[in-house]
Image (cartoon, rainbow, N blue to C red):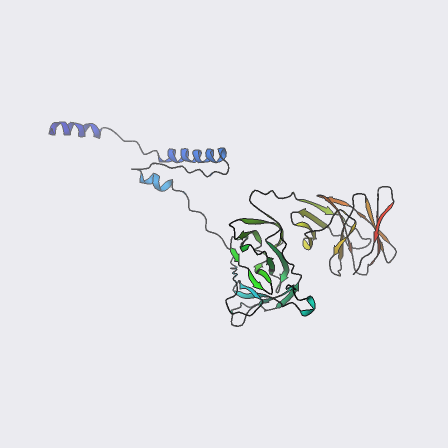
Length: 376
C-alpha cells in the first residue's frame, strides 16, 4: 500500500494545475448580464455563479454596492402640528435648519356661514427655533380653492418666498386621501399628512428653488393611489392632472410666441401646453400658468404686473388669423397667432409709457372677428 501511495504522489507532482479561469468567467458573466438586459427590457436579470473553492472569484464577481443618495446639503422636513396647537396651523418643518410654519386664516363673517379658508400665512422662523443668519419674513397669500371631486388635491404655490430661495406650497386635500408623498430632486421625500382647519383638509410644504418636486403621489384610504403630472421650470413644480396606474397622460406641446413693440421690448415668450394646462414663460422667468384656460375663443388670458415690460397673453379662435394692437399714442402693433397643441395663442410686450387703446382680431379676409380692451 505504501508503494502505491508513493507512486501516486510522484505522478501528481508531475501535473502542473492551471490557474482558475477567474477573468474568463467574469467576462462571460458580464456578457450574460448585458444580453439579458437587452433581451428583456424592464426585467432585472441576476447572474449567479457557483464559486466554491475559488474565493477570488467570489469577491470579484460580487454585485457593486449602489451609490449612496447624494443630497445637496439642504435638508427639508415637514410634519403636521402636534395636538393642542393653535387652530389654523396646518404644517411646520425646517429647510436648511431654518424653521418654518404655515397656517390658514379663519374666514371672515362677510364670506358667509359656510365659507372655507382662502388665505394663509407663511413664516420663516419660530420662537425658540434655530436660524442660520436668515431674516424671518412672514408672507400672506390668498387664492386657496376647494378641491374638486376629480382630483385628490389642489395646490397653490407662493413663488420665491421670503428670501427668494424657497417655494412655499399650500394645498386642499380630498376627504379620501390619507397622505401625499412628495419626492424632491435630490430624492428626499416629504410625507404630507392632511390637517383639518375651518372645514377644510389642508397640507403645506416648503422647498428650496434648486430642489424642486419631481414626483407627487396621493394615497387613498381604499389602497389606491394617483400620481400627479408636473410642469417643472426653474425650481417651480406646477401640478396638473392626477393619473391612476395605467392612465396615459395627454400630449405636450410648446412654441415661441413672437412679439414686437415699436421702439420697445424685444424679448420672447414660450408657451407650454400639457396636462397642467397652459404655462407661459417670459425670458426664462415663469409668468403665468392657467390650468383651465379656454383656448378656443379670442380673449385676453392675462398679463404680468405693471412692468416694464408688461406682457399681455391671449388666445384666438379658429377663424382669427392676426391680431392688431392699437396704442394710446396712435401706433399699432401686428401680433401673430401661434398654434400650441390644441390652442392658438398670442402675446406682446409693453415698455414704460406704453398703454393699449384697443385690441382687434381679423380673419383671413380682413374682416373684424373680435375686439376688446385691457382692464388694469
